[in-house]
Image 1 (cartoon, rainbow, N blue to C red):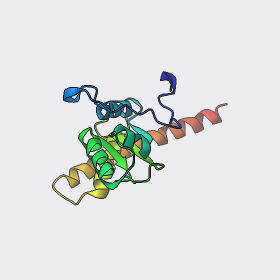
Image 2 (tube, helix red, strand yellow):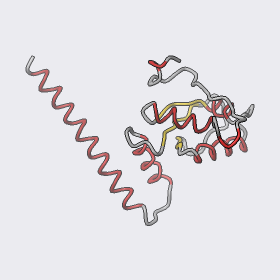
Image 3 (cartoon, helix red, strand yellow):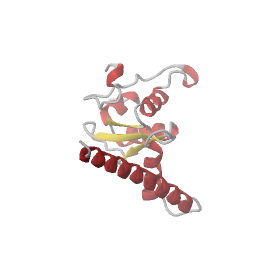
Length: 153
């Protein structure tokens, strides 16, 4: 995949090779997190690629559990919340610490949908509401500007 194609969804994702480097140097999971952060904070990925990144052959229950732990350790969220064991399935990955793109909003949505209510629930919901209000407002502004532009032609 060329540099100019990095924002496009590839037919087959580029999979970082499993690393044998000491002390996390060249960690393929950290590389994956950076790749997702670089490409607007989210990407479609196939389970087979994650399995290969984990250095495994098949997506059994233990392998999927290990993959989910690696993703969590590297601030990578995913939908569905339980990864499938079918290697042909695609999953949606997002970078939880992404503040420039949509990853942070996805992280807040995922937390709201999957976690029990606690002391962080209200602040997270208020933050999510504010972000979405701003997004919808911006989208409405763009729609109105486009409509005005069409009328002046």
